[in-house]
Amino acid sequence: MLPEIKAFFRSEWKRLLPLFVIAAIYQVLVFVLVYKLDPNLAERSYKPFGGFYVHSIRGTVEFVFTFYLLIFHACLPLLNKRKSWQFVWVVFSVFLVKFSFTALFEYERIDYSTSGGGSPNIEKFMREQKFLFFTISNLIVYFFTLIVSFVVAFFIDFNLRTRRQKELEKQKMDAELSAIKYQINPHFLFNSLSFIYSKTVPLSEEVSHAVLLLSDIMRYALGKEEDAEGKVELTKEITHMKNVIAINQMRFNNKLNIQYSEQIERPDARITPLVLITLVENAFKHGDLLDARNPLVIRTESNSEKIYCYIRNKKKTGPKELSTGIGLNNVRQRLQLMYGDKHTFAVTEKEDFYTAELTIHD
Image: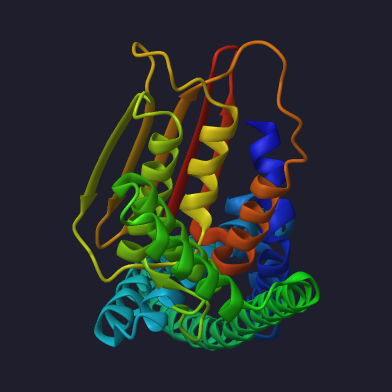
């Protein structure tokens, strides 16, 4: 549990810190508001809640995590999806709940601070006047704080997305420069494959089909089908993943044991390219696919909420194939840059089995 908490604060401190500062300012403003009205009232009104410091610490923690969930996991995602009415409804609901708690809190505090001040009628009048004043004043301060928090959170989120986009562009540029440095002219490559394909058609239908699949995969890998965000249609990624599976089956005379399933409810979903293909290639490289009792399991799903991929393979026995881990590291970096905290990628390695799970949230 503790490592997960540390990881959370390590990844989210840039969002939490500004909210903490705003929350602290909010607590001070409320106290100053009460103190300016009546210094004795300020001391007495916080007494039933453990004093100013205890109440402020509790209120700050509550404020930070409430606003963190509200802004970064509710409001900003709704705004990014252009769901304005849902956004307004969420803000209104939270404000209504806050109004109810504020009214209850102020009533209890003022009831305590005005007790023993004279006749019942005077005490009642004082309670009503102070309750109205503090409730309205508190809500004005809260509303102002809410607006400031939204503005700060928006700029934080915008800055993080801009920085992530720049890192993606830099990585893409570096990849393009590396490709230019080491590449063979694509036209020469595809013309050569076309020539080989034409020559193998009369000789072997299987070989010619393999050449055609290889040509399609290489054309896809060059990134010609990416959109402005560097993504491709999920169905195209799956198609070329199946091409990789087909070529490997040909290599091993269709003796590989593969259990593939898919449930695509949202065919227009988009994904960063070559991610699923890399995971499948990794399974072919390190997996024992000749064991009929433990086949390679590949499962892909997509719906309105997420894209999901599950891959599980039995590990090879005997000498291990030399691996630098560049493929999986590249996948992790690209997913982090493209999706940030909107994805989870877990690789589990046990004694006999290797599992990779990828979830990309919409």
